[in-house]
Image (cartoon, rainbow, N blue to C red; front, side):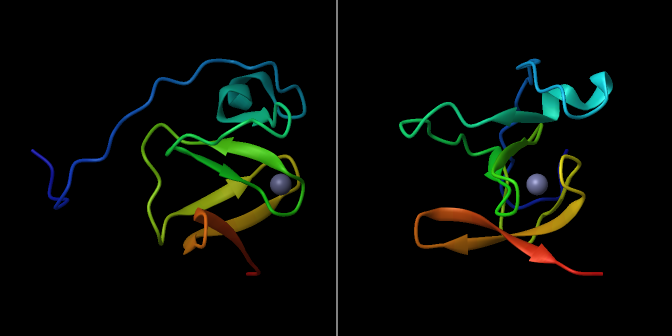
Length: 90
Ligand SMILES: [Zn+2]
């Protein structure tokens, strides 16, 4: 049983060959595949290095993510086109 009001969708991640992070973490990142590429509800574009960060669950506003490719901490916010990553300095 979940205490969250709405169950989040879960995602199986596959390795997309992102080799800028250790093999163990590869499935959590991928590169954008051209201008027609669209992000899934569990994916967030890093505004710093433009790598796609992938989560095992649907992302929501307020979630915090870490981009291992450029070592940036991000907070998920809702923007004009859906969710966006806001850089957090700590
Ligand atoms: Zn990044």
